Length: 141
Image 1: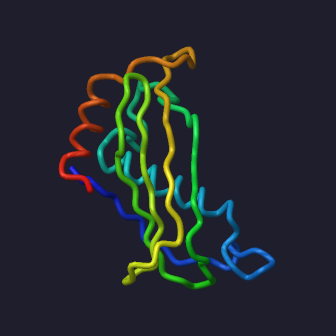
Image 2: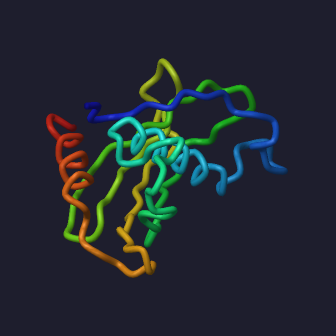
């Protein structure tokens, strides 16, 4: 099971703002894609959704982003995600966005996910989800 999941992409022209750098809101979208790739890799999220599985399993409670360096059109980038912390009803994922083939960090952040029951109320993490998250932390840096 991966401890860090990488999502590779190239900055598109539609990611740019009037100052010709990546719009700050796009970084949260890059985190979102890295989150979904990580959760799919550790099998917390399954696509397509298996028959009978609840439509929504968690919600975001908080997202943070610290911008460190600008990204520009056609930059080759790697967004990375990993499990940082596991609580009773929630878990924290951490992210960074780096220039491909470089140590330059463009952004770093985290998100808090809260597990929901069928009524949309916070509930304890299911055993299988907790196990997958715990295994994804083994050896994480």
